[in-house]
Amino acid sequence: SGIYRAYLDAHLPEPSAREGDVVDKGAQRFYRPDPIDERFGATDPYQPDSSQSDMYGCLDIPRAHTRTAFDANQTIDALERLKDDTFTLHCSFGPPHPPMISTEYYFRQFDPSQMPLPNSFDDPMTDSPYRKKWEALSRYQNPDTIGYMIANYYALVKEVDDHVGRILDKLDELGLTDNTLVVFTSDHGEMLGAHGMKGKFVFYEESVHIPLLMRLPGVIRAGTKVDAPISQRDFFATFLDYLNCPDPGSQGYSFRGLIEGNGWDGDDFVVAEWESTQVPSFMVRTDRWKLMFGRSPDAPSVDALYDLVNDPLEMNNVIDQHNDMAQELKDRLVSWLGKVDSPHLDGVMARMINQ
Image (cartoon, rainbow, N blue to C red; front, side):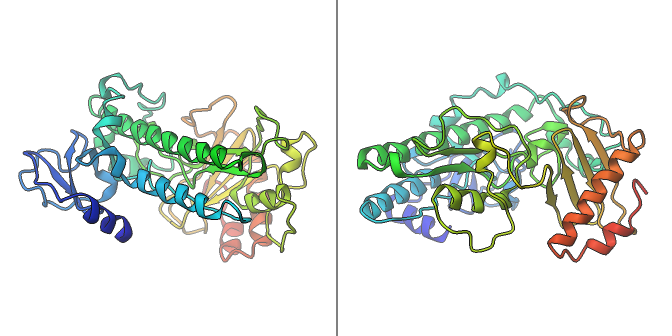
């Protein structure tokens, strides 16, 4: 943030606030808040303070000077410098991530009033592990304003997509496309109004299901799709496999065999973890079932089991009806926690299903 702020200060004079503007304290630039923004209607652009997760609107800077454009430019410059060497290059875009503040150019491509509501938007959350969290998010359960959040998110995705295209074009220009492994992924998703929620701190698919696109011409067949649970801990081993580099001993497994239709040695389930006692600490997901489970006998969180085939929206907690399946997934979790030497192993073992 400091480097980007210095870049903005060097290239753009700090503008004056327009009526109704508030300040993005990260970029120290003004933006026009949308109705879903926590500070919408504020008379002082600097007050009240707001967390970045409640910021939505249009940023008052040219699109050539956004954080995404800045990161892409740095990456393209690095490719030019490294073109004659063997290199690994990581470009980590901030968006789409709070604060969800896009530029006018991208935001106007998505009409908030025309944004489709998530199919689980009206979930009553009766038996959800996240009921209490949901109750505190009424702003994100208003169908008249949630479109602003969705439109800003789509605008930020479109901006990232455009700049990824610029990076790929640079690889073409430098003649590096055919011998470069390109990976596009993310660290988490976004609820975006699904189940009437925002953010990433839950185990619903909108939060934990992330993109993974890989390209290596002549090696990875274009259009190949793998429909299997994969964990991020398997990324490193897979990338090394495709680059013909020895694995120094990572915990993951290469899923190159899955991509090429030959199977693999990895698990048929994935585990996710969140450090909390108020909501489930662990998720175990197979191709059909998902268990959300607390980390100790005294954790007050609610456990849940979802049938992703018959209930892909995860609106019906069936842990009471399928106790045996919940126990099977718990056993897998216990085994996995033992392998990774988790400090929560004993607590999870001692917790009863849906206690």
